[in-house]
Image (cartoon, rainbow, N blue to C red; front, side, top):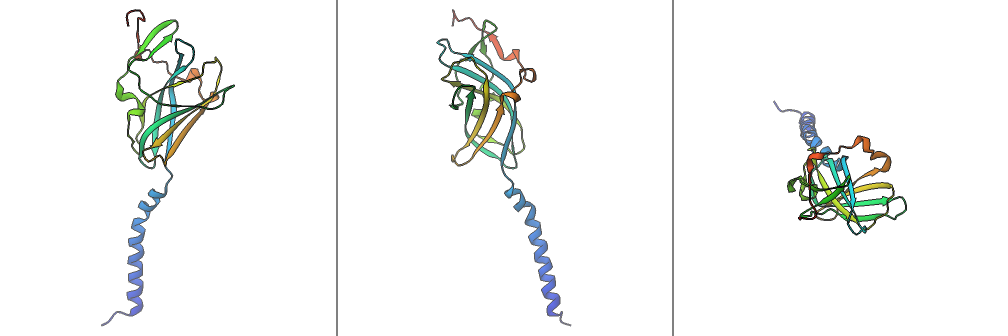
Length: 188
């Protein structure tokens, strides 16, 4: 007994649709927009001895959502009350010394805790780490905003997180004494 052509057609169509639907979650996952979300945990700033630059140290908690992000560099955009937008690239210094409450303190954290040393932000896997910047600006005035720009290896993808002055509240930030050790400027 031969199956009718209609039955073959409909069964083939249904099987094909079921197979196509199996790919739907994968297709939808690839269509999701890649984002980087985060918050500032700690914020420190200090001027250099010539009073020509401000140094910034931020501790961030960040996460790449929906897809991995291949990280080449991290830039800082900062806008002070009376300045134009200033751009700086994250960097590593061999020694970072801040004047905290009149005492010189050396930053003492492992190199692998700096976010700019990462090359990949894994999808949905939070990272906590530090970013160090300097800017050629030295007025004692409020910050309008800071923006962290995450740049991919191909320089085609850029994702940013912006924090306004209102969002960076000192009472919400952590001052972590454990990352600073006393530093004698006369012997070093």
